[in-house]
Image 1 (spheres, one colour):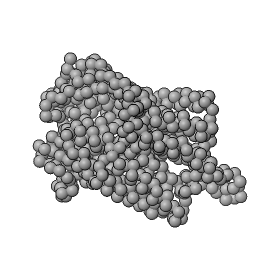
Image 2: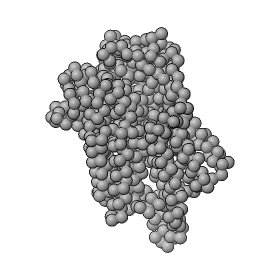
Image 3: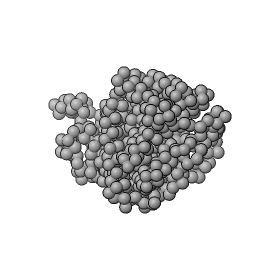
Image 4: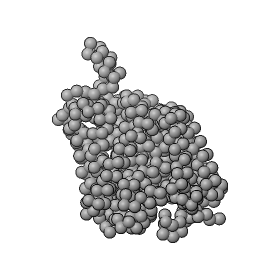
Length: 552
């Protein structure tokens, strides 16, 4: 039996209704940041509160409230949780066999400066993973690598979350942009061009900001050449590819160019002062007193290559899994089913859409085609290179599952919460409240995307959720709809670092389970700052430089 969303259920007011809809979000913030609840506990209570509000105030049928939450929960476990699990499993294998020590030394061979190591892994390599795979892979893999290198887990997770903003809009080979184009019947290249004229500014600034967060102004001045090289090479490539080739390859090509550029720079330049963490400075001081024999021995080129092989294989497998022919073959084993009491039984209504539109709810269990499966295959192939027995391989698999039981639960709960907000109409109600801002809407268009990514953990989902509203509102205000639709995606990526889903992935990968509130407090100020930058860019493009936006 179908049910139509209502957006003014409280006193017939979109404002009051939006305020009520924000209560579960405010509770979740309070639970994490103030009460410092563990992530899975805070998420559980948030889901309960959201279900009650959706039923009592938004008149969402009980069966559909439960069904939408379960739908989101399953999506959180597969494919998102599957990527997190396999990524951490691969990392654990390299640690168990001692090969991560070799990886750590090889990176130190390029530079022992922690700031530049962070740029190479969190910014450049993380962007490559975002462009090729997305769905949590960058934070899970890069975060685990930084912890293995000796980074403080909170900084490792936080820096990776901040770094994973510039590339998110073009993640997973441009899926957020192509999805937005599909749902709004728009030109994908035009959308790519809009985003490609907004995000490169952030991409250029990110390396400077990441280094500043680590070491302050003094530390930033010491590595300005590296920060400039990483940011400029990434931003200019992202701009050119997004504007002239389309949304599929900006991240992959930008990341590779940035990575190579920094490595080449390191051959001709090194910072005068090597930045280390405080505990490392003590070790370095001790070694200078004649105890250098305690340092680990250098490894041969063959040993270094062997240690890096799992991640080389990972890169190859992730790319292989994205090839159309491979994807089509693997999809033959995919199982899909229409979700109980939900598929096409919830209707979006005006003014969110021009006419009543059913919302699909098809769950996809792509057991072979999922990105996580490509990582599992990588882990199996790596077994023969890193030299671990099948028994120890399986033992590590079980240990990883035990390690991640609470983080995976958290991921399932927060994605369930996001889908409940979407299907009940609570997300759309908040969006409508922002859409009533009139000529100020270019300021709030990025905020709308930011809220969408916070709720869903996905720029793709945010674009599907609010893309139509951005388009309709812009047309009513006589603005270029490509500007507001692009701003939805560009602003949305700034919410990625504070999304409960992303926070859960970050804590899972870096051993911070139970510290979700600490990570949230670390990232929130950076999220708001970069959102403000996108808002300023959007306003300037709307009223000062409208010629920058393609289409009509």
